[in-house]
Length: 115
Picture (tube, rainbow, N blue to C red):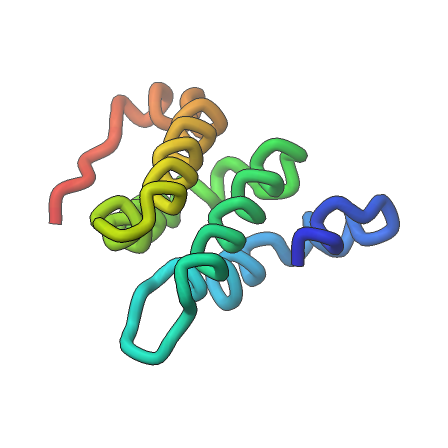
């Protein structure tokens, strides 16, 4: 996935399908479930999302609509006691996400993350 995200040839396709990639591939890979992705895969998914944000491949308005879902998906990565590198990557992702969406968040008057 990282190779496709960084590939010059795939930029247009990645950008047009970015929300599907996030919702169907990357965010589910971040979630811990018994018998599902190990720490390395979860960290790789977070790294890929960061790269998509860095390269502005995700529409800000669409990403903002999924803000609550993204934060909820990250909660278990931030709580993972055995994987400090996963917690660090998750924290870095939140920083990138908030910076990327700062204009959207400010124009909407903030964001309520409570369940």
